[in-house]
Structure formats: structure tokens, C-alpha cells
Length: 525
Image 1 (cartoon, one colour):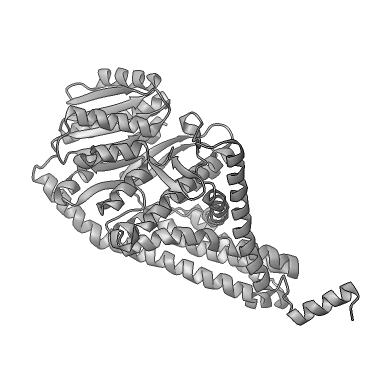
Image 2 (image 1 turned 180 degrees about the vertical axis):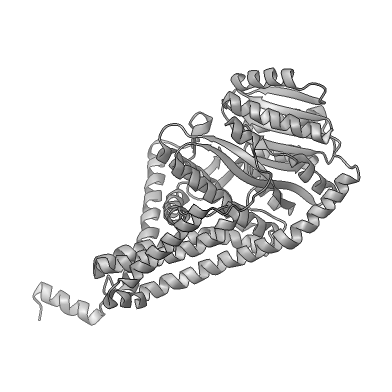
């Protein structure tokens, strides 16, 4: 781990590797050989109207990907370089922020991770040469590590630690306590406040690259950076993390062209001081909630980064994605990797859905139209992602295994097309991406459908396995759970029924045919 930490990249660079090119070539050859050796009868199935429907949805989805790619390239090569040039000139002129504030809620992190975080933080503070204060809400175990490390290594750096004892494993309350303490101590106007996770590592130049943007743009209220991971766990989970961060890097640049992003990541986000220390902002961060037609009012447990994002979005605040600044997260996977992945997908999907509806409700007048449509698309993709797998199952039942061969060939081509978009942002060619894209597409859709009608269900194993508790129990809870099951069944069965009728798996009959069949059944002539 020490070698990985000492060689952190400050931004992404593409790496050409012969083995990756060979693997890509073998993949493409396998797909084309699969198509080549199909019988003519099997190839004719490509003309089936189900493939036409799937292709139509694919054209829509890939056009959406292409649009985001174009927007990302405009941001990368035109918009952001202009912003970077202005920020560099400001810093080189001698400007510096008056103070830097860090806010961290740490909960039983590994000692080496906490020390690496502090080492990177102190390096950045020394390079910027401005006073800095760390507001730390931590478990006694974490607090002891922080105090010991800072006392040994702070030296002459103007760096203070204000520790707030964390009595509950609730990150929202912990962040709120830190921000209230910061407010009481008297925060300097327009000074950057950095919210960080306890496992996040800044790279060289993070503060220098980010802080000037607030001085240049008075309407900017928050920014976030690129992410990568130092991963300790199964290889397949590492590949999945690479895919997720590569997709994030592409999409965040596209969104930033509209001066908004879709999340202010909890790993590291920077805020204007007077915004984040406003009493109503802190109150909502600590006790964010929604009123649901079925479940009533319930409090959010995780997703503090989504709450800060929504509050700024609601107030029409500008946000920025700093694409050339990297923050690393240290991931230690212990126990069952599949179980951990499922827990993460449930948490991420739940956070998205709990905030998506109220963000859409703000409308295109408060939310830039492109961002508003992105929010709507998050809902649509839940259902469109299941069209092809459901149809493939239905048609395989009806037409036999030959159609499954056609479907696999279609998946091989289409998912590689998407992967080609992403390889550039991942930094190298990953052969696993076409497979992972499909697996995540289906699993995410199924998880989101499940959560869509069960929004209060929240679990955060990283914070002591806490669960939210609804203020209902007994018979009322049972009725609400039954309603959730009914709605899940209704929506999914409607989709399956439509596809069964469309594919011809389920045949339709006229009323005359139905009447004749009933008469024969009842013996009436």
C-alpha cells in the first residue's frame, strides 16, 4: 500500500499495453466468428421485430452516450482549459485563500489509511502556506490516531485540529456537529470548506488547483474532483470500481458543461464557507427527509453528499467538476465480495432514487434543462435496461436456443461499442468492461425497481450496520409492505406482458374466438 500511496497520479493518462490490444482483438474475433458460423436460419432471426425494438432502444441509448461524450470533450478541450488558465494566473499572481477548513467524519478507519490521509493533507497545507483547521468527528480510536500523528508531524505548519467526539455512528450528525463547531469558532467569508471521507487521499496540487475557482466565480458554491481507488480485494471488484469511476469521469464532464453536476461526492467536495455553515443548511444535512405517499415522512441515513447537492441545486447554485485533480479512495474489502457489492448497489441506488424525484420536481426553470433531462433519464433507464434480457428469455423459450446465440452476438457487439467510449477515461483497455456493463445494467435495474417502492429501507454496514426505523409497526407496516409487493409485481408484470405480446410469445385472440372457445368449453352450441 505504501508504494501505491507514494505514486498517486494527479490526473488520468491513457496507457497502451500490448496484452490489452491482443485481448481486444481476440474478443472482436470471437464475436465475429460466432456470427460467421451461424446458420442462415439463425441469422434471419436478426430481422425479428424484437431485435428491431432492442436496436431502436440501443440507438437511443448510444445516441445519449454519444451526446454525453461530445459534451465531455467540449468541456475537456474548450471550457475547462479556459477556467484552468484563469485559475493558474490567479494563483501565480500571489493570491491565496485566507484559510482552509477540513471537515471529516471518520469511523474506525485503518490506522495506515488515516495516517496516509493526514500525510497528504499536511503536504497540501505546507505547499499552499495558509492556515488550516481540521474539524474531526471521530470514534475514540480514530481520534487517538489523528492526535498522535499530528503532534509528531505538524512541525511549524499552521495546522490545528478541533476534535468532536462521535457518540453515534451517524455520519450526518457527525458532519453537522463539525459544521456547527466551525460556525461557532467564526468561519472566514469565502474560505473553502472541504468535506472529506476518512479514506480519501488528496494528490499533489489539489488545494492549489481547486481553491482559486471560488475567487474567480462568486456564483460558484461547490466543486468536486475526479476519483480513483487503491483497491484491496477481489480482482473483479477492482475492475468494477475502475468501470464506475471511468463512467463517472465522462458523465461529470458532460454535466459540468451546464454548470451543475449530479452528485457532490463525499470523498472530497469543496464548498464556499458561508453557504455550508448556514444554520438551515446544517439542519437539513443532519435531518434530511422526504414525505412519501406510501411510507410517510422518513429520515435519510446515508447519502449526505446527495443532500448537499440537492440543497445547492434547489438554490440555483453553480457547481464545478475539476477534471484535472484526482482524489483516491482506499478500499479494503473483507468478507464476501458479492455481499459487499450488493450492499453498495443498494445504498447507491437508494440514495439516487430518494433524491431523484424531488430534484425532478424542481422543474427545468430551477434546474438547467439538460441536467433536468438527465434526472428523468435516470428513471427511464431502470425500465429500458430490462427490455432486452426479458425479451431474450421469452424468445428463447419460443424459438429455442438459436435466438440466444443471436442475442449473445448482439450483446457482444453493443457492449463493446459502449466500452470503446469508456476505455479512454479508464486509462487503459479492460476486457472485462463489456461483461461488467451488462451485469451492472441488469442488476442495477432490478435493485432500483425493488427500492423504488421501498425507499425507507436503508442499511449502512460501514457505519455499524445501522437501519432507519419508520414510525410505524404492526398491522400498518404489514399493509404497507403488501402494497409495495403489489406495486412491484404490477409494474414488472406489465412490462413482461407487453414484451410477451410484442414478441408473439403470448398470442392475442379476438372476442369472437374467445366466445367460441368458451362455448365449446361449456358445451353450448
